[in-house]
Amino acid sequence: MDWRIFTLLYDHKFLMLERIIYLKDSGAVFIEKNIICSYEQLLELAKASKNIYIKYTITHDKDLLVKIIGLLKLMRKLEESLLEELYNMI
Image (cartoon, rainbow, N blue to C red; front, top):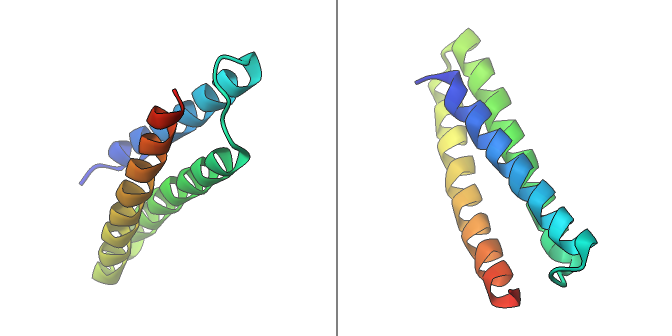
């Protein structure tokens, strides 16, 4: 596994959040506050997965990989529902 994938994942979530905030602030789309808060949580999950992977590279504790897999599954589920809500708003 390569640490860059977790950085890419974090950067993607960060940019998506910035885009959502831009759409809201520009008045192009009405976006509810809870969507932005949920995307901030998604960003924190991405950050956590990156940090756990860094810890794994130092300790080689297999339980950390299980945590990462759980976080990735949770992130997928959360982002799917958030993107569906955003799509319905547009």
